[in-house]
Length: 189
Image (cartoon, rainbow, N blue to C red; front, side, top):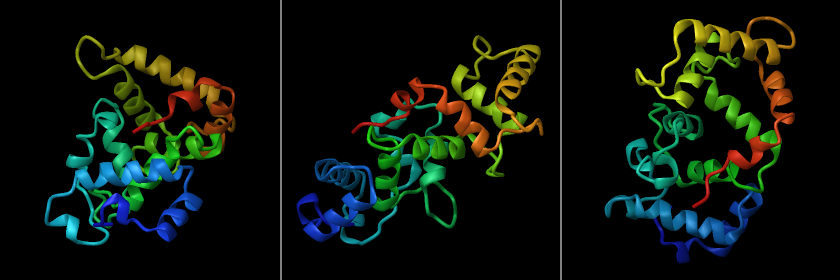
């Protein structure tokens, strides 16, 4: 993807549009923003991967408490360093777009919140999730008892099969009852 936005090509642009929830204009803007993150040498190579460090300089991600997990989930890197190719970047933007379905948004939200990547949200994942949302400073951190009570409440509401974890279908069930979820789960360039 080391070409400029105007050189993306109609076929590739159409293919990206078919494979994402993005419009041609959004894809071109995404390509422009992605190439701005590349160094001069990287712009000359196809499928260049931008480091997580540079991706996180984007204002849309900079203040997101899940920014590193987002990069981790959308990265196709073997090293899982969070570096993104342009196609990874498009997948990220597509999942967070207004046009993405509730099923897609909840699937990726679940993966982002599954900090240990084991396919379930257990007490450890839920604690990390709460800490990301509340901040981990002394002023905002929940006490041990507050954290235990909150996680107990989350599991009481979400853990339908009572196995002590929340799986994807349980998570999607909870999200389906939360109309604000779709509008809050987005990144707009």
